[in-house]
Each structure stands twice: as C-alpha cells, then as structure tokens.
Amino acid sequence: MNYRHNTNIVITELEDELVLLDPSSKQMFSLNAVGRLLWDQLPSLGLTGVLERIEATFEVGADRARTDAMALIENLVRANLLVETGSPEPDEVAGDRESGQA
Amino acid sequence: MNQPGLNSGREQSTELMVFGRRFTINGRLEPALENVLRSRWDFNDQRLGIDSFWIRLYLANVCPAAFPSETVSVTLSLPSGPLEIRALESEFWLGTTDVGLHLRLLEGGAELFAWGGEEALCRNQDLFHLGLTESLRSSGLMPMHASIAARDGSAMAFLGPSGRGKTTTLLLALEAGYQVVCEDLAWCDPVTLEVMGFDRGLRLLPDTMERFSALLGNDQPVWQGDKWFVAYTGVLFKFGAPSRVVVLDSIIALERDPDGVSRFESLSQREAALVLWEASGVPLSNRLQRQTSTQITTLISRLKAQRLLVGTGTIPFTRHED
Image (cartoon, rainbow over all chains, first blue to last red; front, top):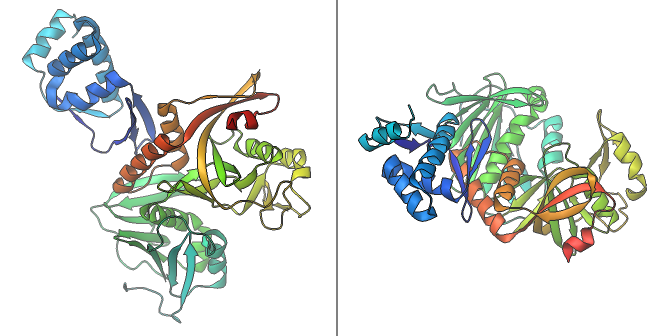
C-alpha cells in the first residue's frame, strides 16, 4: 500500500519528535523519533524502503521493525493522519505473507 | 472598501487601539455595541509586537451579499450555542444571513463586515471575538488561555484545561509575592516573548473568593451569575498593582496530585507542545494554523517548561525560580 499525508494536518516540529494536530477533530498525536522517521519518509520511500531505513537507523530486527511500523501505520490511518493511496508494493505483499499478516 | 447593504444611516468612524493595532469601526455604532467592543477590545495604552497592522470593521443592518457556495462549512460549539463557519483560505463567513460576520485576512490588515443590527450583534459577541482573534493572530500574536503571574517583569504562565486549578494557583502565586497579569486569557508576541493580559479582572467562584478575600483589597466584587468579578483597576493587591505587559519566562502545566506534596517537575517538549496547542486553540485559517505551529516551536525552544503537581503543602514558587 502507498500512503500520503493528510494535507490538513498541522505539524509541530520538536527536536526529535513531531506533534500532529487534526484541526477538524482537535485531536493531537505525538510521534517519537522512530515514528517521525516513518512519517517523514513513508510517502516517498514506501513501506519497504522505510522499514529498511528504520532497521538501519535504530538497529532493530526486521520483524520488530515491520510489526511496530504496521501498528503505527494502522493507527495513523485510523486517525486520518495518513491516507492510503494505492496498491501494495510487490515486496510488501510478500513480506506480509511471511509475517503472517492478512 | 464599500459593500452593498452597509448601513446607510449617519456615517461615523470610531477608532480603538488593540495592542498597538489600529481598529477602526465604520458605520452606525450604537452605544450598546460600542460599549461591548470598547469593554473587550480597547487596549489603547499597551503595545505588543508590530503596530502597523490595521483592523477595519464595517457595520451593516443586513448581510451585504450571499454566502459563496464553494466554501467548506463547519459548526463550532460555543457556550452561546452552535455557530456555523464557512471558510475559504483567507476569508470566513461566521453565523447566518440574519446575523453574522465576514472576515477577510489581507496583507498587513484585516477587514470585518458585521450585520444583523445592534441588538443581535450584542447578543452574538462571539462573532467579534472569533473575528478579532483571527485578525490578531494574523498580525503575529498568539492567544494563550492561561493564568499568568509576574515578578520583576518576568512571567510564568499556568496552563491546563478548565478545572485544573489555574485561578487558584495564580492566587497562591499572588500570596507568594507575584503580581497578576491575567486570570484567563493573554496575548503573546512569540518574537519578543511579551505577554499582555486580555481579561479585565478576576472571575472567582464563591469559595475561592472567600478563601482569598484578604488578598483582593477593598473593592466591591460584582456577581456575574456564576462567579464573582473583581476588576483589576482599583483593586489593592497585597504586593502591588497588576502587571500588564511582561516578558514570559516559563510555561507551567498544571496537574493535580492530591496525595503528594506540591512540587515542580520537568516537562517534555512533546507535553509542552500539547499544552500550548490547548492554550492557543486552533485558528480558522490553514495559514494561521501553520503560523501557530511555528510559534509553538519557537516558544518551546525559548521558554522554561515545567509541570506543577498541585498537592499538599505550600507550592515552592521560590525554589522553582532557583
């Protein structure tokens, strides 16, 4: 799946973190350094690319990176901060099958 | 600028200064509405930040033009009731064709067109509050729902949702030797860090009034239906008159800890951002939302940010300063 930011979201940049505000609901969300990397680079790199970047930057295993990233993406989409824009990348489908996700 | 439907009666122009911004009211300004606007928005003696920004209000009896159909519409829930807002990027229509306000944010200024007649506009003061708040934001200022106390020209803002103890903490700070800047709302210039209180007095619940009566001097408070109003002017504060323009030094997020001792703790940047967004509120305009985000980032980088857990014992204001 490809993703883009909801363009209505207001972003407050801190040193390592981001605070995301949805003006329509007045709800606020904060992202730590890992979440910030995912937020910044998911739209351009895609899921496979951003997982590789997370693994390299934070020295976490592939399974842990995928599990945590997918959980965060699901929350961001549910909160209408991220918008799904297209079909899954081929690598992503294979990765989902390997990790047992639907 | 003229629009069809503007009041055709005796033309007059009234001028107020709002934190150094020239606020001109054009059209027939009846005494009751003038009193409403002056009592809330006349800050002739104080300046914050740039002062070349202008605000022009045009009064009309009827809506000057039909609402544009391509606007996005949202409904705000206000204490006075629901208010419909239609928005384009820098233009807003608040209310209805019967009573409402059209706001245009322009380069260097803001124009507001209000209609509905004096009586209806006096009943719908939220229109002016929203329109002028957005205008002042556009001039570079940021509103801050907070109680603020100052000493020696340096101020600390107590932040938190309603009921968190902002007023009580402010009064405790006054007992400790601080002066009041505001009890509910201030305007801040994030460039200079100057803040100025917007409210004109303390609004106190009866039990708070009783608890702190010795602090508030001898003026007669006024009962306003739900709280006592104690005007800043004429009040003999124990440690000196209220400060109006001061430099903000710290933001303090209030939390309750009834089982613990009152104490200050550190506040993360993320927590500071959340409380500052709550204190500022969300502007109507996308551009001003982004501006507020930048202002909050600036404030966090320049202010001390702490959490005050209000529990038992005396709040250690002095130790906080050290």
